[in-house]
Image (cartoon, rainbow, N blue to C red):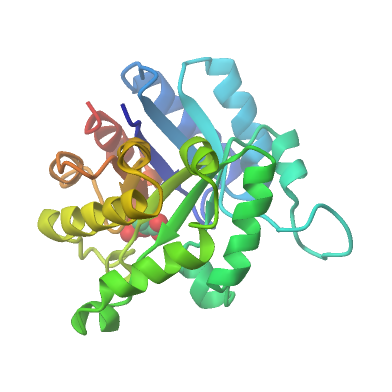
Length: 256
Ligand code: PEP
């Protein structure tokens, strides 16, 4: 049975004190998560160590720590970058790769993202791989081809065991990120089901059925339940609504 996952992407937000208080409140008020559910806090790099301590101290099962990026090299002269072993040292379990903001502002190509995916899988971390189309592509009705190319060029070189053990996919239509314009449940389900069919063709149906596919893009306390009820939507990657307990907790509850 595939996992339901809610991951909060804090982006470049939160003081240390606010981040710690947020995690404490969420973990204290959240229902117990069984092993088929995960909540992941993807914090800025500077917050990872503190939030790892907080998660460890509160000691509730199935809450995890995530980073929002990593470098693809092991170590060396890469000023301003953070390696995967550094992330592991501070307790990171998952890393978001290919977020549209990194693709757009830092020109991260499918080929470059492939090298990050490889480095993470080699180190046995969980990859939260983001894909999704712009409004222009949606309006031209070529979103399926676009998303298929992102998956083909960055992810589908992995072997079956790597896909199964290390990969979560997040479908995030760019036109829905931070805009308040959510994909309809029909649009989300259609794309998630398409992504699952691509995995079935590339690998096999068993693997396709086991991989969690999250929806991201203005998912909030009001629409999460409906989105997560779609057959192929296995949770969410949450931006704005992950920054407050009263908006993030109902999204966690929507997994139940
Ligand atoms: C995101 O950036 O991954 C995201 C989904 O943002 P928001 O929830 O704010 O649309």
